[in-house]
Amino acid sequence: MEGLLIFAVVGGMSFVLFPYVFLPSQFLSVVYFFIALVLGLVLAFEFDFFIGLIAFWLVQVRAFKYMLQYIIFFFAGAVLPLDLFPGVLRTFADWLPFQYLAFFPIQIFMGKEENPLGGFFIALCWIIGLYLFSRFVLSRGIRKYEAVGY
Picture 1 (cartoon, one colour):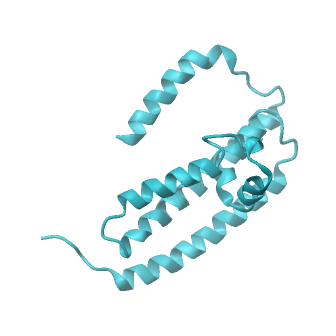
Picture 2 (cartoon, one colour):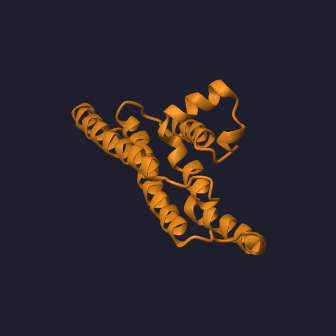
């Protein structure tokens, strides 16, 4: 249901804003943008999966999930561009992997990130690291598992 709602809102906004959005002039920028989108989607899945793993230790995880998602959206640059963050907050955001979800692909699309290969490498390292850490947490969670219900 959440995906359907997001699709409807983004679709409606896209219909209204379509005349004002232009594709990058260089084909390579479009390719880089789609690579960044794929890496961002994989990273977003890993974050959601990791948040879901918290359910092994908490009975009710929904409120915690939404709180973490808003923090992630904020540091991904989805609420406010990271360029507008004050110095210390921007430095903190640069150390986190969240910018690869929204800010980094947008920078590529707008042509502000001319050579994104370093960013791709860092995003890939985060993906591999989170995958390995999630496997570790999953194995610990399965040992702790308790069923709640009737």
